[in-house]
Amino acid sequence: MNRTERLLHLLQVLRSYRYPVSGQKLAERLGCSIRTLYRDIATLQSQGAEITGETGVGYVLRPGYFMPPLMFSQTEVEALMLGMLWVSTFGDQPLASAANTALAKIREVLPRNIKDGMGAVPLRVGPPALKQLMKEDLSLLREAIRHEYKMKISYRSKTGERTEGTVWPFAIGYFGDGRILACWYEEQKSFRHFRTDHIITATILNERYSRRREILFKEWRAGQLEKLSSTLTDFS
Image (cartoon, rainbow, N blue to C red; front, side):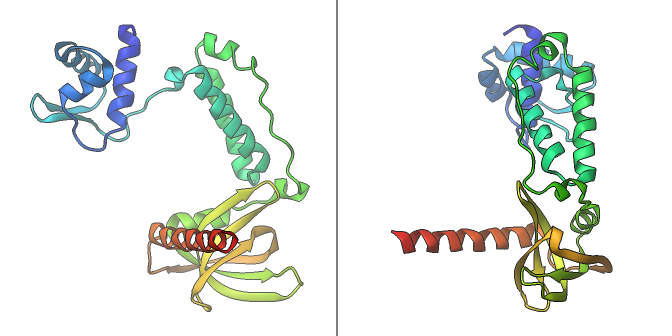
């Protein structure tokens, strides 16, 4: 590992820790001496990296420091490409457009050796099962989730029955044959799932729900795992 690679790797290692980590531990992870580590930290600090700490206390990289995609490996770039291709195909219209733009930006700043190898392994994503999904816009749902606002929705069931209710949206599941809004249904006091293409109208209410979306997601996920466990027990 040359010095440039070691400096980039040091940034990656520091980013993986939320709390100060000792210089000795960092040196062990990088496979270098403690003296070399101190020099590397001083070099990064002189180049603008906000690394705080000192000998005997530990070091931490302050959140928000930008690490450019120049340090991505060929395989990491391929993973990013495949992920963005998936979003550009299966995401709703604004997300698909954003994925294409982000991919173009990453292509622009990649070093030539990585860029030249991007097409060496063809990566493709199949078309969505329902073409109308490509025109769907879920920006309103994402906004409500982002700010933890309640929503009033009107929904059409598989049988054509129309229902209305107040929901606390906290997640959107993207699948090849559709998208699912996961939420707390206020009237029924339970978790519900709604196909987004069956939502007739959706309005953000000027009222935040009382529980954080992270808590709702954890409770929902625990319930899903419990159902899965029960299903596996039934088949055992």
